[in-house]
Length: 357
Image 1 (cartoon, rainbow, N blue to C red):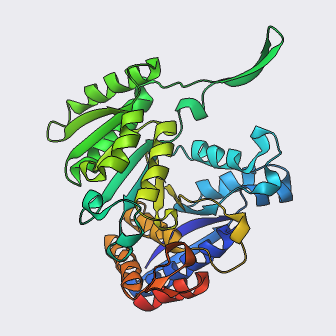
Image 2 (spheres, rainbow, N blue to C red):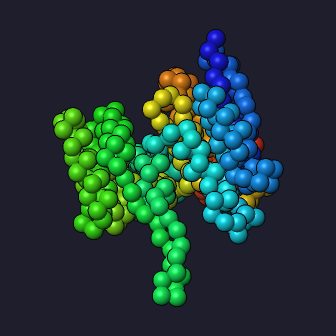
Image 3 (cartoon, rainbow, N blue to C red):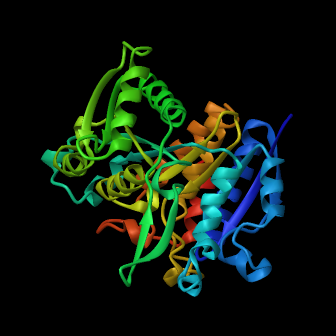
């Protein structure tokens, strides 16, 4: 029997609630498909600040490095908003990505049939379905470039630097091209090469990598146009490749086009099989502890974990099918509630997915 070693970072706000439901589903999947799971708990984010004084303790990094995969709930909250940048919960998220060398973020934005009515776009715009994969570079760019504050002519100023190397762009581009090969072989590169020098290097490098993928149709859009096209005609996209900041923006926009950010999972991958899996929504401290958070994005993140870290496609498919089944049955948490839906809480939704399995 295979044993999967997984570190749980429950995090802040609704994080512990949604991770609990994802673990419930994963445990049931393990029984069904004949593998076992060995969990390790660790602190990251606001809870780590409260306990240790820092958002990412070394102990957490060590536990994650010793595991096969990491499942994260969410980090952050109003409680820690006034802390300096390097001590905010979000610094832990950037730190763990760097420590695990996770440079590729895969963010699928998919409209599930039963939730098509939740899409804010007209039916003639969205068509029968939408299934987009945003491939976002994760450990470079403006989030990791040189930054600081200074006083110029008596006026306080601040700067953040967009910085990429050819090596960083090459490796994320290859992830995007390989993803496109597994889908419809269409890749749209997003940059701002008409203005930014870093984007010019980015595009030149993507074009160079493209020579190794003559079977993939490559197109380019500037970020402002891409954001517009995503709501004007999302059907034109299959795989989108973008830098750290542009990918962050576009994937959140795509989540709203899909109807609810509470449905979207993500995988952060590096050069090995270890990955970090998390829903793309935030910690939502305003609804924490009320049993109304949507756990489906975290449950779908577990499916991505089984697919990408453990190559267990059958188990991943089963979880995704179970999620579709509960949606077909009309079960809805408040964020995806429809007129004919049956409102359920966080725990009830997790139980329903287990039953569907």
